[in-house]
Amino acid sequence: MDAVLYRKSGLAVLLGLIFLSFFGTLALSAWMFPQNYDWRYRVISNLLSARDNPAHHWLPACGVALTGLFMLPFVGYLRRQLEVVAPRVSLISAAAFLAGIVALIATCLIVPQHAHALLGIRRFHEFLARLSAGFLAIGMLCGCWCAWKGIRPPFQTETVRLFWTWSFVTLFPLTGLFVSEALLLLTRFKPALAAPIRNGLRHSVFWHLGFWEWTGAVAVFAFLCAAVFLTPPQATSKIDLQLPTKHK
Image 1 (spheres, rainbow, N blue to C red):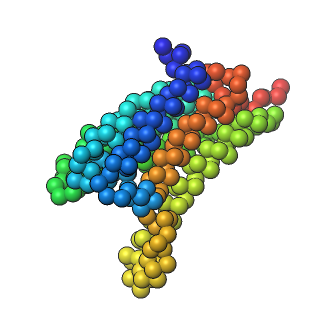
Image 2: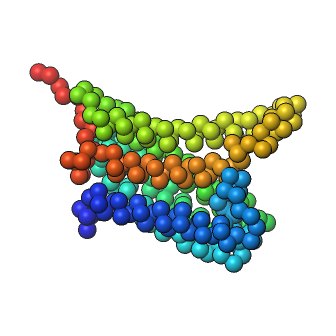
């Protein structure tokens, strides 16, 4: 069973299931949302909220939980792919992905709280969601580092494509999110700049967390797709990331 899951055909099936369970259920829930749901401005948690989506909040919760389960085989797959280049970093990447997936599943079990604290933490659901995003980002950054380290002569086209694809889908949402959060902090510490910044970005999607949540979700899915489809076709258990050969 383990060997089957690590074959590209098996992983491709899992990618299809991830797409349907995550984006499919969220899209269906957004279509049935009581109010107009605009993914550019609304966060994903609105769809899982019993207050905001009382009739169908269970649907995206089940879909996201299944997504986490379908992602679990990729933890071992990515570690096997990357340990050729950097065993320690590949372990960190795998551990970060596993922690992110566990936190993702936990967000589906704990509905968004709008009034009461859980375990002494207000908005515990949002805390778990940010924790999941943070761990997944660490895992993706470690993967980018391993791919960069694996680019050695003779250059493999697949390895170079993998590095640039991983770097783009990882750094683009992270950069946008950091810039958005930095501007938000600036408005708090510099009240004089609050009005110009908010007036200038009020109608921009880049100012809203919902846009970056959806962008990050697409980025994680694209990262997994690249891990499966941009590896050398002849390598079924490890990607062709080779350490430089020592010359005698």
